[in-house]
Length: 191
Image: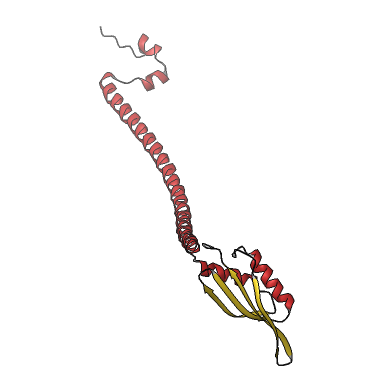
């Protein structure tokens, strides 16, 4: 006698529809595991690629910002270099002027003192230095202009003693009368 169970056995009754759907036959389990590993690897590679892409974009943005800052710094650097070159040039000029001033000889210092002491209404005809002795001749519109000139020369500190007014004469030039004068004094040595 042959019996056929059409209803199914105890195993069939225990497994529900859900369990039967996910139950994999033993011969396909290795293939399903391989597919799962490949899927997990693909997800990991995609995640890693996405992370690298985000890092690359952030680095590209940082590089662009650094390049812009570099351009600004280069422009500022050129300005600083130009300013330093100008400062060096001006410093050299100032040093040259200071060396020339230090090297001024007494006649140059005397001419400077005389030119700074000239009042309005007075002009010079002759300035003669022999050794330490100086003789200045000129004309003035008034005696006041002459005395102002002598006082300024005296206060310049270039002369050793008081200046002597050697001669004063009144002259007529056209309708105007002027004072012709001659002054003598001794210049400080090294001044």
